[in-house]
Length: 83
Image 1 (tube, rainbow, N blue to C red):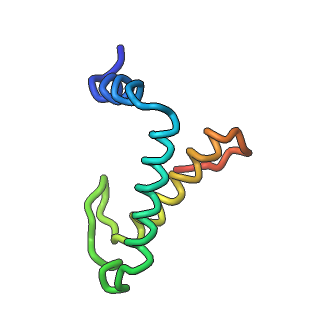
Image 2 (image 1 turned 90 degrees about the vertical axis):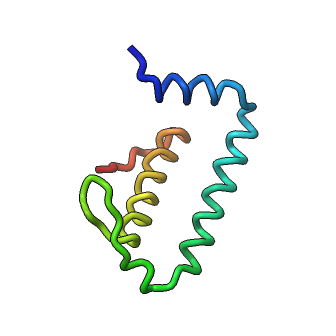
């Protein structure tokens, strides 16, 4: 059975044109890059709570690894491990 979250995401994404979703994804990631580029070093040391306690720099690096993992899946490139 599909979870409520997955069902919502699936239904919501079906309402968008593929090009709009790609553009949204691109713009969001572009904005994240800008924020990270200009983030002061001290801010990167701030603690964030995921399943464990990490600093913001770790969270940004983890996001990039996760992003590359999915890009390789979508573009049918050699798999990139994400753990």
